[in-house]
Image 1 (cartoon, rainbow, N blue to C red):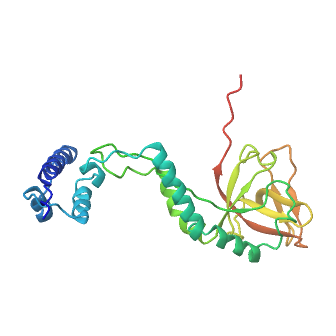
Image 2: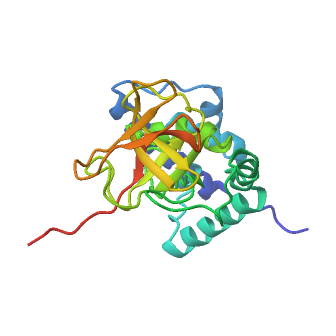
Image 3: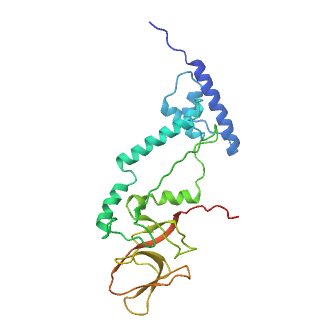
Length: 263
């Protein structure tokens, strides 16, 4: 009969690490960490705790199981492998709803991509959102940082992205400069087809192609105008014949080129 493995030294190291992280927790919060029954049992016994027990302890003192077990941080190669696997899962199960959004496009837009006329923007694409938290928590510094406003807004928009309510277009030309510049990628909310006066909208004219502009109601019934931010361009009249389609209202710039410094 083989002897039972001795884990006492491993447990002493684990207990020492937990006590160290508890002290750091106390210093951060200026109060002593309350020792509950789970923590007390782990600190006072040589019996190996289960993984769920360790996860509960790590969460309560704002660190990770890997930190308590002194596991090395993932290297760049491991992170790349993990990222590739996540990309595969997202694509395999359509977690962002890209393929579902494309199917909705076929019913929603009367103009196919092959027949689309690019004038001031290209064909609206499903809005892709990639959140890649490559932040490495330093030992003892916790597992969650404060999210920036931009990140929070992106997270809140996930539902709209998944349901296909947001599209992204790439601006072509300078008719809306400096508000929208050539190459900017702009989010279009395709639910908002009754814009307020002065909102930037994406209209598709069945002969002239995609047009961007400030929405303005004309003086004559059924007449609308698209005013330009760039004074060098004339406003575009949309007549009552309705040979155009309002595809949505621009909500924000989601990507913009970063120009180099001019000498």
